[in-house]
Image (cartoon, rainbow, N blue to C red; front, side):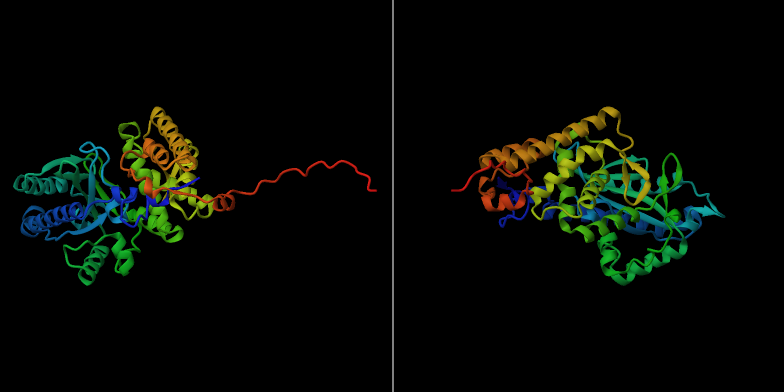
Length: 383
């Protein structure tokens, strides 16, 4: 048996699979600089024009969410069709978008103003601009973009969020769900989820609270350790490597499958290679049934996958399990790398020196004991 843990994670020279998935410092800085420019443009435009346009003075607040905040972001396997992204939510008080009990300031008007601001910014920066049903997208490089979803929350919570920002961070700092929880400055965490509204280009406003997924994932990492975060990144890398074949398999769905595996086993092996095998073996079964959102059990994740897409995901998940198992059992380090690359791609380093041979003692200790029948002993006569 082989020990692939250093190949996946923890090599002293950082030449591991996880390191190959991680963004370079310059890539992080580029996303953060773009976020800063987007925030500045939106804030200045609201401060300058909101009273004239909407008859209400307002200064929006911003909250980073998604994989950048969860620290599960990977470099894209196949750019430019795949891109690294940063999601930065724009929050406004509910009085800005409603009158009485129903929103009267159409989401269309909100989006139109934001789109105008960002289009001007993109022209100045020579960036690309596009729209999605629930956000505006600013493409800052062939393999990178910033998504800007738009939210409305009750005025009291908006003031709490504003106060938390002022106490903990400057306006342009990386204020996100992870930082808010660690610094205990998220003073609007008691806000009911059904009072967070997400602007939608076709459906006006929808109840949608991005904190719910974050709360669940942060608790999952606290419960099972950082390995759970790494397993999520490995599965996302596997999905991205397979490209359009399973591109519709959402990151949240994969994270939920990892979580369910940990919950069912009450923890996995401490080594990443053995844990990845356990997760990969469980994945086909989990993908066969409805994968429920752990933060909202009424939501079925990946429900939009067609029967053919789901079957392809199950088939490729089975191949992943076979490849990881074969890599662990391979007769040579190079063969181990070949098997892993079959499912995870060439970002698995071609470093045979990072593959160690597992000792016989370790293999025996790891394998579950087998119960065998007692041998049949014939009658004998002593003399």
